[in-house]
Length: 223
Length: 79
Image 1 (cartoon, rainbow over the protein chains, first blue to last red):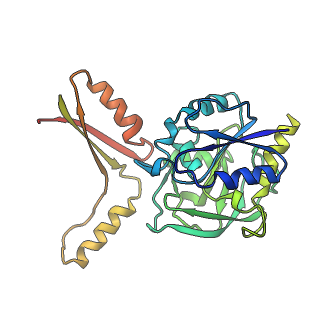
Image 2: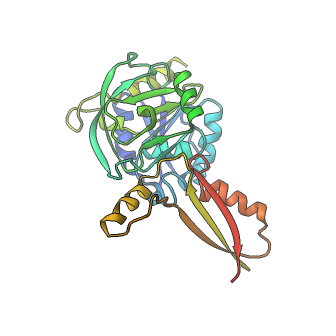
Image 3: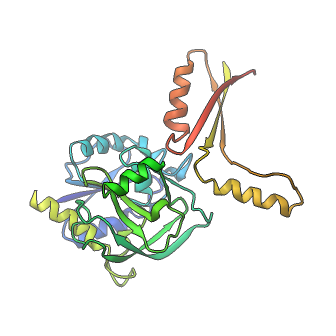
């Protein structure tokens, strides 16, 4: 059975929901601890949402140096699929695994809503279950979700199809409505919305988030 | 021992909504003539003589600031 690791940092909030989402699609969730430099032979890793290390300094800035992150970065370099959700996305940007940065929402307000998104890139390891340009609804909740990068980087991301999701109705001021991006290989993806909160109609707006977890499982089973 | 001050500021091209909010509040308090406010961070480090300028630059660039969105200056100040 495919093993998908979910890292818990001090201050992580959504690790348990993420573990549940992994289990729902039929993979084996593996709890990883920030202080352990050991990935326990997992086949993919998810960095969940929350406020790691209290978001001190900058969101994700301290988590990037956690012992587990050394292993995560090394494994990602060898092709391990890696997903960062919300705070996890912030960590991936701080670690330099994804371009750009997440800054304070342009409104200066915390936003929490069910957010319509468009799937711009269904060719990543994490989005193959979606149709191109599919419109999905995924909850989001964050204070530092405004995606910024220099003009060259933004041009390159759009030109190379590396914008994975765009907001339909920009909630936070993100440049080019960017909600999620991928690295050049399509194995490392980060997004601000929370697919793990959209896996069960009882507890979310629908099940549009399941596709991300099913996508990586398809990839792992086929590998 | 020396005190080192590291100032971290958002790059000019990066939107600074916090600075804008402060700027917008000033006229409401009766202060006029302030055309722009940018908000950053100041760090004060107490360092011993073994810490050279190159190390301080690595600290500023690698942790205290995110060079994607921020610029920094390091200066040693008198005690």
